[in-house]
Length: 79
Image 1 (cartoon, helix red, strand yellow):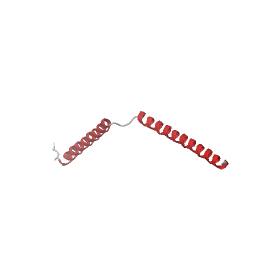
Image 2 (image 1 turned 90 degrees about the horizontal axis):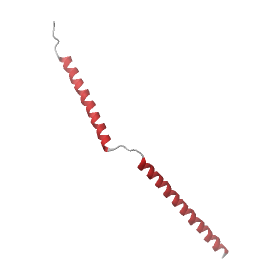
Image 3 (image 1 turned 120 degrees about the vertical axis):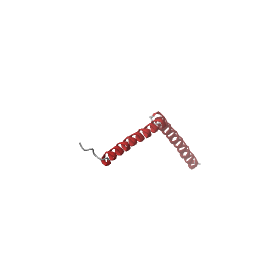
Image 4 (image 1 turned 180 degrees about the horizontal axis):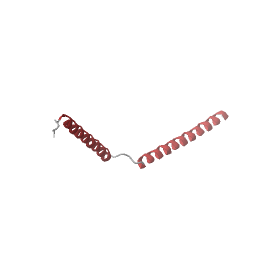
């Protein structure tokens, strides 16, 4: 019987430790979740604005290239 009580005590201690570990991990997960929710994130509007800006820059660069090519191939007027 003495061995049973020692085993029971160990199992009770293990249960308490398991509960503490579960509570600790729940607290960690909760803290990480709150940190994630509070942190700033990129919104779809910002991503779309960035995409439009890239398109605008590329279009501008393409126009410059076309003008440069046009000037190169254009015959020069003699004075």
